[in-house]
Amino acid sequence: MEWLTLLDGRPVGRAVRQALGPGAAELHPGSELLPAILERIDEVGSRVVLVGGSDDLRRAWSIVLAADYPGVRDGGTRRVDWSWLDQPGSGAELARWVADRDADVVVICLGKPRQEVWMRDHGRASNAGLLLAFGSAADYVAGTARRPPRWARRHGLEWAVRLAREPRRLWRRYLLEGPRSWLLLARRGIDVDVRS
Image (tube, rainbow, N blue to C red; front, side, top):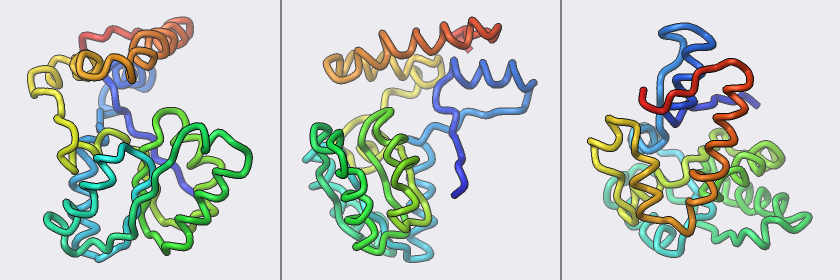
Protein backbone atom coordinates (compact mmCIF):
# COMPACT_ATOMS: atom_id res chain seq x y z
CA MET A 1 0.00 0.00 0.00
CA GLU A 2 1.34 3.43 -0.91
CA TRP A 3 0.49 6.64 0.94
CA LEU A 4 0.27 10.15 -0.40
CA THR A 5 -0.20 12.81 2.26
CA LEU A 6 -1.68 16.07 1.05
CA LEU A 7 -0.72 19.34 2.66
CA ASP A 8 -4.11 20.79 3.44
CA GLY A 9 -3.46 23.81 5.63
CA ARG A 10 -1.25 26.85 5.38
CA PRO A 11 0.61 26.46 8.69
CA VAL A 12 1.52 22.86 7.92
CA GLY A 13 2.44 23.70 4.31
CA ARG A 14 4.66 26.55 5.44
CA ALA A 15 6.35 24.41 8.09
CA VAL A 16 7.09 21.65 5.59
CA ARG A 17 8.41 24.14 3.01
CA GLN A 18 10.71 25.65 5.63
CA ALA A 19 11.98 22.25 6.70
CA LEU A 20 12.50 20.94 3.14
CA GLY A 21 13.28 24.15 1.28
CA PRO A 22 11.40 26.39 -1.18
CA GLY A 23 9.44 24.57 -3.86
CA ALA A 24 9.55 21.29 -1.90
CA ALA A 25 5.86 21.31 -0.98
CA GLU A 26 2.66 22.75 -2.35
CA LEU A 27 -0.76 23.04 -0.73
CA HIS A 28 -3.28 20.63 -2.23
CA PRO A 29 -6.58 20.80 -0.37
CA GLY A 30 -8.87 17.84 -0.94
CA SER A 31 -11.67 20.29 -1.60
CA GLU A 32 -9.92 21.24 -4.84
CA LEU A 33 -8.75 17.75 -5.80
CA LEU A 34 -11.91 15.67 -5.36
CA PRO A 35 -13.77 17.15 -8.36
CA ALA A 36 -10.71 16.56 -10.56
CA ILE A 37 -10.41 12.98 -9.32
CA LEU A 38 -14.12 12.38 -9.97
CA GLU A 39 -13.69 13.74 -13.51
CA ARG A 40 -10.92 11.21 -14.11
CA ILE A 41 -13.00 8.40 -12.60
CA ASP A 42 -15.86 9.50 -14.86
CA GLU A 43 -13.59 8.90 -17.87
CA VAL A 44 -12.49 5.40 -16.82
CA GLY A 45 -15.74 4.18 -15.25
CA SER A 46 -14.49 3.12 -11.82
CA ARG A 47 -16.84 2.17 -8.99
CA VAL A 48 -16.97 4.65 -6.08
CA VAL A 49 -18.43 4.22 -2.60
CA LEU A 50 -18.82 6.85 0.09
CA VAL A 51 -18.55 5.96 3.78
CA GLY A 52 -19.58 8.28 6.57
CA GLY A 53 -20.74 11.85 6.25
CA SER A 54 -24.10 13.33 7.09
CA ASP A 55 -27.50 11.98 6.08
CA ASP A 56 -27.85 14.97 3.73
CA LEU A 57 -24.53 14.18 2.07
CA ARG A 58 -25.36 10.52 1.54
CA ARG A 59 -28.78 11.41 0.07
CA ALA A 60 -27.27 13.94 -2.35
CA TRP A 61 -24.13 11.97 -3.29
CA SER A 62 -25.68 9.46 -5.70
CA ILE A 63 -27.83 12.12 -7.33
CA VAL A 64 -24.82 14.37 -7.97
CA LEU A 65 -22.70 11.49 -9.27
CA ALA A 66 -25.41 10.51 -11.76
CA ALA A 67 -25.93 14.10 -12.93
CA ASP A 68 -22.37 15.44 -12.99
CA TYR A 69 -20.24 12.29 -13.39
CA PRO A 70 -22.37 9.79 -15.35
CA GLY A 71 -19.39 7.52 -16.08
CA VAL A 72 -18.78 6.89 -12.39
CA ARG A 73 -20.27 3.59 -11.24
CA ASP A 74 -21.99 4.32 -7.93
CA GLY A 75 -21.25 1.61 -5.40
CA GLY A 76 -23.48 3.16 -2.74
CA THR A 77 -23.04 4.94 0.56
CA ARG A 78 -22.77 3.75 4.13
CA ARG A 79 -23.82 5.53 7.29
CA VAL A 80 -21.16 5.24 9.98
CA ASP A 81 -21.83 6.32 13.54
CA TRP A 82 -18.66 7.12 15.48
CA SER A 83 -19.89 5.19 18.51
CA TRP A 84 -20.23 2.10 16.30
CA LEU A 85 -16.88 2.63 14.57
CA ASP A 86 -15.10 2.89 17.92
CA GLN A 87 -16.25 -0.64 18.88
CA PRO A 88 -13.89 -3.59 18.36
CA GLY A 89 -14.39 -5.31 15.01
CA SER A 90 -16.46 -2.54 13.43
CA GLY A 91 -13.58 -1.21 11.30
CA ALA A 92 -13.08 -4.67 9.81
CA GLU A 93 -16.82 -4.95 9.20
CA LEU A 94 -16.78 -1.65 7.33
CA ALA A 95 -13.85 -2.87 5.22
CA ARG A 96 -15.83 -6.04 4.34
CA TRP A 97 -18.82 -3.88 3.35
CA VAL A 98 -16.58 -1.86 0.99
CA ALA A 99 -14.98 -5.03 -0.42
CA ASP A 100 -18.43 -6.56 -1.03
CA ARG A 101 -19.27 -3.58 -3.24
CA ASP A 102 -16.16 -4.17 -5.35
CA ALA A 103 -15.17 -0.53 -4.85
CA ASP A 104 -12.28 0.89 -6.84
CA VAL A 105 -12.37 4.19 -4.95
CA VAL A 106 -13.60 4.97 -1.44
CA VAL A 107 -14.41 8.53 -0.38
CA ILE A 108 -14.11 8.52 3.41
CA CYS A 109 -15.90 11.08 5.57
CA LEU A 110 -15.31 9.82 9.10
CA GLY A 111 -13.63 12.90 10.56
CA LYS A 112 -10.04 13.32 11.63
CA PRO A 113 -8.29 11.22 12.82
CA ARG A 114 -10.83 8.35 12.55
CA GLN A 115 -10.69 8.28 8.75
CA GLU A 116 -6.89 8.10 8.67
CA VAL A 117 -6.83 5.43 11.39
CA TRP A 118 -9.45 3.37 9.53
CA MET A 119 -7.47 3.67 6.30
CA ARG A 120 -4.27 2.58 8.04
CA ASP A 121 -5.84 -0.35 9.86
CA HIS A 122 -8.41 -1.57 7.31
CA GLY A 123 -7.67 0.00 3.94
CA ARG A 124 -5.94 -3.07 2.55
CA ALA A 125 -8.87 -5.30 3.56
CA SER A 126 -11.29 -3.06 1.66
CA ASN A 127 -9.64 -4.17 -1.62
CA ALA A 128 -10.13 -0.65 -2.98
CA GLY A 129 -7.42 0.78 -5.20
CA LEU A 130 -7.76 4.34 -3.90
CA LEU A 131 -8.86 5.60 -0.49
CA LEU A 132 -9.60 9.32 -0.21
CA ALA A 133 -9.97 10.89 3.25
CA PHE A 134 -11.32 14.20 2.01
CA GLY A 135 -14.14 14.83 4.49
CA SER A 136 -15.80 18.16 3.69
CA ALA A 137 -14.71 17.98 0.03
CA ALA A 138 -17.50 15.45 -0.53
CA ASP A 139 -20.00 17.95 0.93
CA TYR A 140 -18.75 20.61 -1.47
CA VAL A 141 -19.14 18.24 -4.45
CA ALA A 142 -22.63 17.20 -3.34
CA GLY A 143 -23.70 20.77 -2.61
CA THR A 144 -24.57 20.01 1.03
CA ALA A 145 -22.02 22.58 2.27
CA ARG A 146 -20.60 25.78 0.80
CA ARG A 147 -16.88 26.16 0.47
CA PRO A 148 -15.58 29.27 2.23
CA PRO A 149 -15.27 32.30 -0.05
CA ARG A 150 -12.22 32.83 -2.23
CA TRP A 151 -10.96 35.77 -0.10
CA ALA A 152 -10.82 33.48 2.96
CA ARG A 153 -8.94 30.79 1.05
CA ARG A 154 -6.52 33.36 -0.41
CA HIS A 155 -5.65 34.72 3.04
CA GLY A 156 -5.43 31.36 4.83
CA LEU A 157 -8.66 31.93 6.75
CA GLU A 158 -10.76 29.06 5.41
CA TRP A 159 -10.55 27.45 8.85
CA ALA A 160 -12.05 30.55 10.51
CA VAL A 161 -15.03 30.61 8.16
CA ARG A 162 -15.62 26.89 8.68
CA LEU A 163 -15.37 27.36 12.47
CA ALA A 164 -17.90 30.21 12.36
CA ARG A 165 -20.31 28.04 10.32
CA GLU A 166 -19.94 24.87 12.42
CA PRO A 167 -18.62 25.84 15.87
CA ARG A 168 -20.01 22.80 17.72
CA ARG A 169 -18.38 20.35 15.33
CA LEU A 170 -15.08 22.10 14.62
CA TRP A 171 -14.13 24.00 17.79
CA ARG A 172 -11.97 21.19 19.12
CA ARG A 173 -10.09 20.74 15.81
CA TYR A 174 -9.33 24.40 15.27
CA LEU A 175 -9.03 25.73 18.82
CA LEU A 176 -7.40 22.79 20.65
CA GLU A 177 -5.88 20.30 18.21
CA GLY A 178 -4.56 22.90 15.73
CA PRO A 179 -2.63 24.98 18.28
CA ARG A 180 -1.28 21.80 19.89
CA SER A 181 0.07 20.70 16.48
CA TRP A 182 1.60 24.14 15.89
CA LEU A 183 3.34 23.92 19.28
CA LEU A 184 4.80 20.52 18.39
CA LEU A 185 6.17 21.95 15.15
CA ALA A 186 7.51 25.02 16.93
CA ARG A 187 9.33 22.84 19.48
CA ARG A 188 11.10 21.21 16.55
CA GLY A 189 12.25 24.65 15.43
CA ILE A 190 9.83 24.95 12.51
CA ASP A 191 8.19 28.34 11.93
CA VAL A 192 4.40 28.03 11.95
CA ASP A 193 3.36 31.54 10.93
CA VAL A 194 -0.32 31.22 9.95
CA ARG A 195 -0.26 34.27 7.67
CA SER A 196 1.51 32.69 4.73
